[in-house]
Structure formats: C-alpha cells, structure tokens
Image 1 (cartoon, helix red, strand yellow):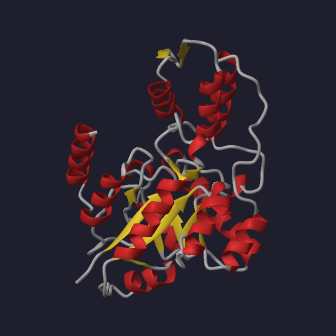
Image 2 (cartoon, rainbow, N blue to C red):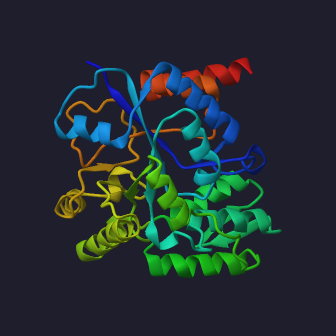
Length: 312
C-alpha cells in the first residue's frame, strides 16, 4: 500500500524578490526544479482523485503527491500556473476571500514591508524590546504577537507599528489573485478551497463568528466560480488554531476535508478534518526538499539540511 504526501506551499516569486524575505517564499527557479523532480518520481494527483481515496478510505495505488497553496498570492497566476500547465498537473489553492482583487495585503506582508522600510535599529512594541538590525528575528518576534490578535486588535497593532517604525502608509499594490485570474485557472484545472474570509485565527473567535468567517468564504467562492468548494485549510493551521467545534462547523457546511499545517507524513487512519501537510520552505535546498518528499520524516529532513550545510 502506498501513501500520499500533501505538500504545502505559500508563495513563489522571481529570485530577485526572494532574498531576505521570510521562509514561506520560494524562488521560481527552485519551484520548477521541484516540480520537475516530483513529476518524474511521483504521481501528482488532482484534488478530486485525492478526495475519492480519502472519502472511501481507499489506499493509493502509487506514490503520490497533492500540491496545495495557501493564501492565493498573485504570483501564483504569473509564475506557478504556467509551470503546472507545462508539466500537465493540477494544484489546490486556498483563498481568504476578503483580499481577492484588492490592494490589501495580509498582515505579515505589511509587517515585512514596515521592517524593510524603517530606518530604526531598535523598537519597543507591546512592552518588548525588538532589535531591528536582525530583520528575520524581528519579523518572527513581532509575528508571534500579531498572530494571536483578534481582527480589531490586529488593525490597531498594525497602525501602531506603522507609526512607531516611522514608515509610510502607501500600500504596496495588489499582491493577491483577482477573480478573473481565479476563474480562468478554475476552468483550466486548478481547484480552489476556502481559507476563511479574513484569514483569521479561528481559536480567537466565538463559534458563531467562526461559522460566519468560514461560511462567507465558501459562499463567495461558490458565487464567483459556480462551484462549491469541497475543502478548507485552517489559517495558521497549528493544533491550537482549531478544535472540534470548527470541525463540526465545516462538516455542517458541507466540506469534505480540512487541511492543517501540522507536519504529516502518513494519511493512514487520519481524521479527514485534520489532514496534515509537509511544508515546503524557501530555506530548503534541493537535497532537503527531496528528503522531505521521499521520507516525510522531520528528523531525516533536519539531518539532510545539516549535512548539506556542512558540505557547503
């Protein structure tokens, strides 16, 4: 019996835009190399194929991969979609519908821009001193605070950061897919799932608010594409970001499968409302990537990264 590994991507960009960004961003060249490798050694399956096996608890007939992308970044249309077409494979994209086609960035994109633009070297936020000389550490520290906030709190926090870091308030332009792009890709084999309306941490909301966030994203996608999304991905996706109440809401709204960001190398016996994935990171060299998709082992992946770094 074979296993299917679900890979989780976020953003793919031209190499010139990757340097210095957080680990969720992968270069276009690295991405195509990864896809070429996957199509040569695995069967990259569609979401429909995946759902048939999961819903019927059927084993997979070959080593297979399901590609998923969270957030629906605009670069998916410009960079990822052409590569997928070139290799004749599909992928599933999870959309937070409040951002589609808007000059509105996710908060982590705004935070990255603030840290890139500020001239300050030190900063105090939420009572904590932040060393801005190390942009990666500063980003991680501030992001850990922002992720736990409610929507109103997050808006106030971003205003405070923008003011305190002394950066301008101009938006960076559209960074998310628009509905025209999404519709074209949907007609060409790309599937779309829900990711809440505002990309919220469901654990920070009462059940009715959570239901509204999930239901609204589902309704908008169905209205725009004429197809009800069958799958959902929990924003942030760690075990403390969702619970049994959210699983029940998803079932009641008609979702078949929900994906987490919890590392999962085997789907055997898994709750379909808690399907884990393997994160593909911008920090992965090619050897690390291959170890991830072949073994699914976190330990072996860390060992491969350490070995590669030692050699290099």
